[in-house]
Length: 380
Image (cartoon, rainbow, N blue to C red; front, top):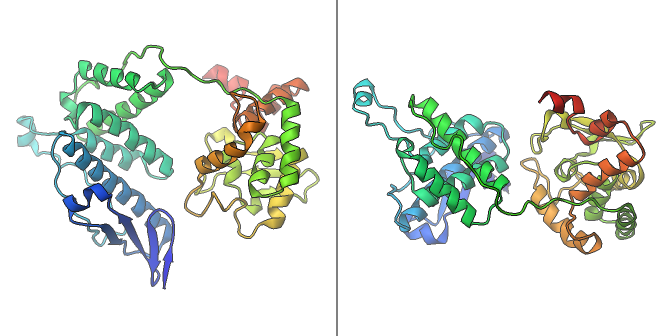
C-alpha cells in the first residue's frame, strides 16, 4: 500500500521514498522526468531530514543548470542516488591535501558555501530557513555568477548591493540578504580553513525603498470583525477570532493542537509551546495566554469541532505549519473590512495598544504577547 505525505515523501510497504518532478525546462538536459529515491528508513523524522537535504541538493543543481543556460559557469549532471545511509549528507567540496593547499588550488564556490551553511545551520530548522537561504544565495549567484569566494572583491559586493537596490528592495531587506551571504561565506571559510577577509562585512546600504508600517486596527472595527466571524462560524473565521483577543502571532495560532487549549481551568488559557511542525520565534514566545472574549469563543469552537489533533488542519500537518497560506486566505476575506495599511498582524499590534489603554503593567503586556521585557531590551 502506498501512502502519500508532504515534502515529496511517500511510503511504500512501510518504507519512505522521495519523489519529485524535474522542472519541465530541465527534463531533456538531465534525461529524467521524475526523481524517485528510496530513503531506506521507516522512521518518519529521519525521512523528513533526508527529504529536506535532497530538496536542497536538487534545487541547487537545478538553479545552477538554469544559470548555465544564462551563461554562468558549468555544471555536471547530478546523480540521483542514495546509499545505505538513511539520512543523505550534503556533499562538501574536497579539501585539498597539504601539498595542494600550498599551491593554492582550493576552490570553494558560492554554491559550495550554501551547502556548508545549510549543513551546519539547517539542522532542526524549518523549511522557511532553507527557502530564505537558497533565495538569498541565489540572488548573489544570479548577479555575480558562481564565483570562488576567495576571488570576490569589494567592488563585486557593491555591484550586488546596487543589483538589489534596482529590484526595489528596502534597506532592511537588502541587509537581510547580505547577512545570509555573509554568514554562508564565514561558515565555508571556517570549514575549509580559508584565511581571508569576508568582502560582505561592513557593507554600506543607503536608505532606499519604503518600509511599510503596520497600522493597528481600531477597537470598533475589531468588534465588527469578531461579530462577522461568529456569524460565519467556520474554521478560517475561528482562526481570526482566536488571535483577535489573544495577541498570538498567526503562525503560533495556526500550529496549535487540541491539547494546547485548556478550557476546564478556572481561567481558560492557551499553553503556547514549540512543536516540531511549528517552532516559536523566540525563547520568550513560550507562554500561557488567558482566553477571553472572541478568542475564548473561537477556542471552544475549534476544540468541539476538531476531527484531528490539529485545530487548523488546512494549514498544519505533522511535517509543517504553512502560516503564509493561512495569511493569504484570511487576508483576502479580512482586507475589505479593515483600514488601509492594516493586515492580519495588525490584530497583534492592536493588543498592545488595548492593554496600554487600560494601564496594564508593561511586564504583563510583554508576558501576554511574548515580547522581550523592557529590562531585557535595555540590556541588549
